[in-house]
Image 1 (cartoon, rainbow, N blue to C red):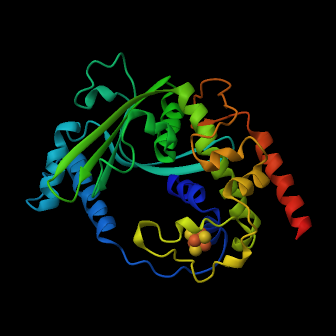
Image 2 (image 1 turned 180 degrees about the vertical axis):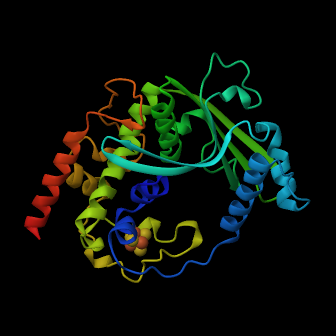
Image 3 (image 1 turned 180 degrees about the horizontal axis):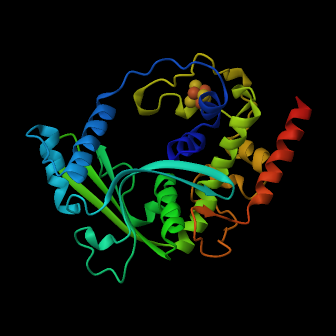
Length: 306
Ligand code: SF4
């Protein structure tokens, strides 16, 4: 099963993803940061509110969560922390949604939405939410997590539009909430998914199944100290094994030209993919089987070169 965070990691450093998902190398232990702990506690407070109706506690984090309640539905109006899995173009994905509903009109501020549109809310706890992550509606189409949630929602409900709300909580300085809303169409999500998510997810499937040496994958030395912490595979990462290939070259070698550009981010153009028909189950089929075949033959050629 592929998660949005695995896709993010593969897009950031394919080699680190290979260490994590395709090898037995034990990573250096990573102590839980204050930011991660705050995010987990904040999610737990909001989950208890949605599922049980419990008011946020009288603590600084509880007070911050309380500030977000005007953007949330009443307890019980939406499904909280639901596990989902879906297969898209042969790749199995899974994730947890903070909140989802078949009718986004239960979300405050959405009563003008036409008809019954499904909706998803995700909580983000950040020191500087005005600077990082999704800032505008257009950013949803560049974000693997948002695209996966949207694609799953289309698969589940069979609609042509989905409403997404990223509710961002500022954890440093004066407590503040930044909601970012978007109404996305099936067509734009399908196109963006094919560029942003699918190539990296396909590479992850092969990383998991082929058992290659992680050091044979492209490194990204700019990612070695992301979030101010050393990569847990720094000790095993062979810096001499950089063959001068960029991540784009590596992905191109893996999945073929045209698809690899997605590894470099949403600004790169990739042939769009289309749904052949509206899905009625949690299985979505894009005409991308050929990519898997190209990937398989590329890996065979690579193995023959070694
Ligand atoms: S040390 Fe740097 S290049 Fe090597 S796997 Fe980690 S992030 Fe990637």
